[in-house]
Image (cartoon, rainbow over all chains, first blue to last red; front, top):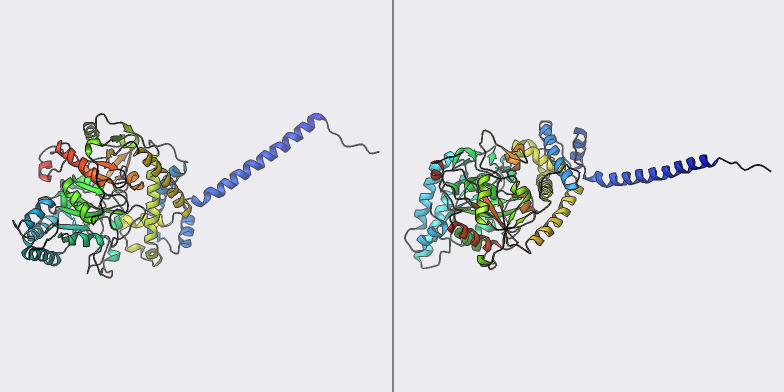
Length: 93
Length: 449
């Protein structure tokens, strides 16, 4: 009769702990992924590539001469977006 | 220039004629506007025709209306029959002329008022400075080296200079209240959608409103009746008004003279903190950028971006790139903030706050300090007005009476539909000598800071 594979109680605890950690990690990663998926649609385009993509989606192109000013303005708007969404450093109400 | 009510009374009583009033007005505009850069088009032929109609009505024994013979101007975004509506932009200089007047102009005309000019503004109303690439920078009558505020700066400057008794402007985030404060006159941002927007070039529809500039609360009350076409609500006796002062951010970014005036007006009034004011302003900023950009998306698609005023072009382009989801989040917060304000107005009738955070900045150095940081006046002079527009509330900018110094203003903020109460309260403040219009010469005689 073959002997059932057995491990020591301490190894069982380690394996159990690892399995539990893996579940917790999966849950955390899943939550973070889903949260990111929720937040991403509100992201303000900041890089030249993001700006070009966003403009193309709306049917126009940003002239090169306007890019510095557009980037600067989007930085300001991103600060306002962070404040609206609760991610900004505190400002006196 | 006399008050609108005084001019109308004189014309109606035949102590003068509408034609004489308008001729004097046109002559003054021709002489004085060169230094103000406030007028974009003088409508002399139309004005004389309208004045003649008023005089003919009086001669025939007909009622010429409560604004008989009173000259006025409008910000360059109102439709005027026969003229292109430019909104201060070269892009629309050759647009198809409007076929009819904006409804507000129609109502004023029916009351006997005479349109004499269109007035300078930031292009598409996007700014608080009235720095315009086509027409130039409107000067503050109290100090020509300083801006008049914006975006309705031309409308404010001609009233402050005494060239016209009243004008119309538009206010999306403070574009009436800010220039009224910086030029020392009265300016009304009405309850959202209370006055007719038909025939007005849009900026951001969630907040766009039109309103009058004038030199007395009594003139504003008359204009309110005319512009509302008799659909105004009754007011409240000011003896029973419960006043509060806005604290928090409103009590941080202001001139000490504004704080002293608030203390004098309502020494025992409670201080109300609206909570998320900074967040409200940010949400307003985002909604404005998004909606403003959307208005011009077709022009951008036609490759016309480089025809815009450089000062507004990049801001509108950036706004057109904002994601829909962010806009929706801002609108959702707006509903929450309005609920907060509604609960405040369950306990108070009028809230007092600064209209703009400081005196007019210089044209050479158009910067201000907000929250301890240097920032562009063109973008941030509306720090106190923007959260109020965000909630759709009526707000009346009143000038502090301080001859010898640059103008400063406060806002009297009411619940929706309470404009008449605001006029009466402003009248009471004027009677107490705390507020009132000072002529530019009067202010320049003393310390102009």
